[in-house]
Length: 83
Length: 417
Image (cartoon, rainbow over all chains, first blue to last red; front, side, top):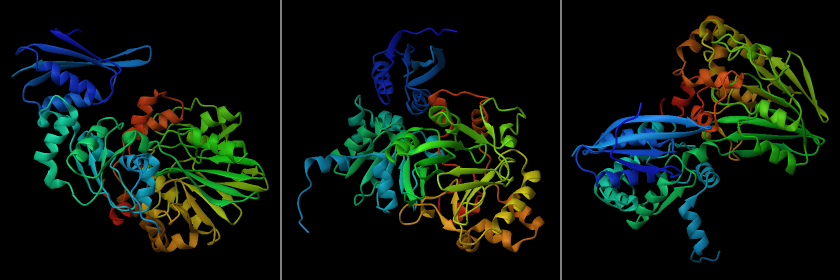
């Protein structure tokens, strides 16, 4: 189940708030309708991206995935620029 | 007294509070304000609480970032606070910035200082606060020492009872270092590890501590069956029996089976001096009978067990398994009181002495706080039926225990559930 995306942001190993701060910067560089894929290892990022997408007027959270590899979880967020 | 300017190191330490610093300030009733930037549900489930409620405002950091509108977190904090939050922040109190792990709140504390506020960051965030341990001696001598080992944020109490170089640990909490360090520094040999019951609110350190120290772990067999799953525990344990005596140095701990909160709940009596009550009698309240999902059938048992405890010598010191508010501690931060004292001021015991058996059961059933769904899984973990990774374990344990009946806490002026 892989989503289509236009740009990849690797935020693995970064702690809160950096995955979101960096994603916010990157989304500003995308064209309308384009999707940013963010991969993170910070578990808190799941709820934070949901909360952020509700507040931000120019983004839509398209999908979120959690993948477990070798006991470590990777959280993936797909964010679309809508305005 | 010499008045001087604080050194740079002192000023820095004022800007970063460890969990231990925070506890000290809460116990001293220092006045400060909290700006909590976690998600709203985390803030509601696990607020920062002291002897008295700590005034707080909650704004998730992603709102500050987005509505502050800057690329940089610090700049966003400054812009957001200045425009949208200033009217809610006191100018005459220190402001403690709080987040989940202490990283984001560092930006918040810096932003507040840039705006002229006095502000500190809670180092390690609510995770560090939730996992902070405090150790208080109730009595300390070569003949007998009792250490109360607590997690102040969670309201969990455990004990190390020591005599003549030997020790028994009762209800150890999830992290082993406080017990291992204490035993090492006091030159104590741990000889047994006991859980008073199968805990629902926190993950027991009992099995792990027993394994680490090479001793037996004891649990009443009734609590080695998960009450909802009706499945047997897979953990290694020795049967704990009514009347069983554990020798520790020159003293003895005697087991009293007092079913009610769980079917296998056991209290321990050290002569006429100390009574380790587990989850039966707390300081301000009593335990709830519904965490096994059988409130109606367990409540009468609970009442009968509590009445048996009331018959013990009035001067015996009650050492409970939980507290609901830091305010229940004495000035030295210890949670202990004589049984006679509690007969007069413990809400549940006052009702118990006034009511018939039926009346008391009614009181119990009408006083039940909200059921915490995580508690079913925590009981599974403690029975070895579920093995969470560290992060899942920490999430299961998030927030303060809700093992007591509700009135006491509401009556104390704390935040309602």
